[in-house]
Length: 495
Image 1 (cartoon, one colour):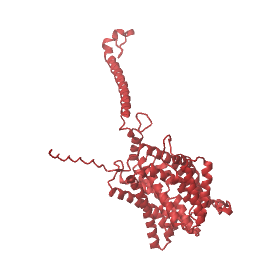
Image 2: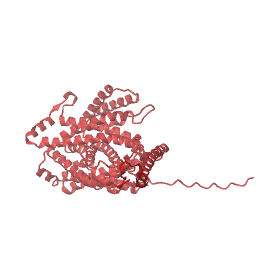
Image 3: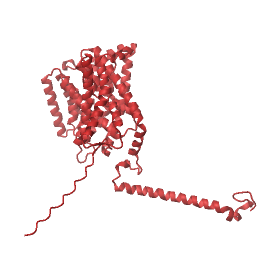
Image 4: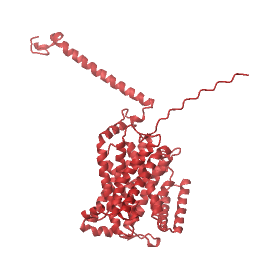
């Protein structure tokens, strides 16, 4: 009988490296974020223009009447329950396009983006949850102590990504892509939570027949997608029917946009460069950012402002709660959620960033424009005066948050510029930043060839300089006989 074998030595556990929070993005994610941000930035600039135009239109005495007339002009088939004002069409119709794009973004993040990894998803989800809970808490406490209405608790919970990116386009052109992606993902989660709030808390009565019809339409929409049916002439009419049924059901019509966006396939199959979801998002996003959201802003931001009205924002608990929720609640909530995620997981903040950077981005998320205005209209429906005051509070709170973020980001701008230059450097001119090719042998071979050519060129230049220097030094002593006319090279002495 053979002797028993000694137990095999236990293999050493693989070293556990802490996951980096807000570290460098993968190359595909970086390219996607860059494309999305370009469109959103342009849309954000148009949003700012529309908001300013609305304020001018509503506050210039000669124009105020026309603004009211256009906003409240009704059109649409009354028999279908769709004889709505222009402002109503903008809020319920055009914003459905915005939330359709948001639904596609969330689906892509869940199946192919950062939210696919539960560990990576924890940060933006926790930050978004805290960034909505804390502003709601700030609003609630402000109104409990001041005797105000609690109906507007959800107004300061939303972040407007287009508005925030428009501010970044002006003040933060060198902001690292990781921080921009964090803000974008945070806003996507924020939008989904906001639409859930609208669906759950701002649906007073439900027409189950219309809701059932909308659900059947969504099932047909999903089946057509599963069968691979293509053609806008199929999906656009069906989407309009689903939207109309959802609107008449009493559930906010933008829910239809989110639901259809979530149904699109956002993973690629063999032979596809882009998934159907990405292709449709690429087509619809400019419509959302460039038309739908700016038009909504044009007919929602036109509130009458005056020195007294702005001063009253800080005197009334409902409006003060909105301002404090956006400026203080959003910043503390998102920063605190990020810090807690890092503190109680194995993650650590990227060595390229500091907590001051997270605080600055958190303050930027206090810009709550589009969805905050929408929730304000729903929360105080029936009280036009208070609705306008809450809208003024949203505008003022967003302006304060943007100003605070501007100051904080400018303090770190030199650091951001160095990081951006490092991220964008492409010495081998292959169109891919060098930081993504450090583990690719082909990259190093290309760089070696480039450096060899540069070294050969520098050697040639050095040899020419040395040869010329030698000729200059030896010319007066050994080359005088070759100089005609009897003048030396370095003087006027006779030859």
